[in-house]
Length: 22
Image (tube, rainbow, N blue to C red):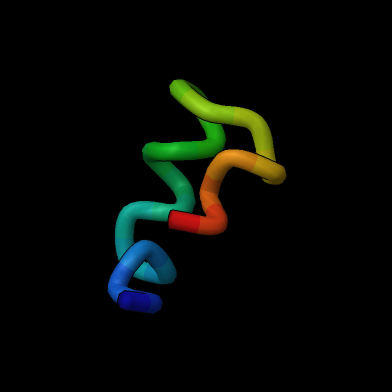
């Protein structure tokens, strides 16, 4: 699921760019 592209901006604050793989 690559829907993270939407919350990738919010995830970068919580998880590193490496954890956003999920």
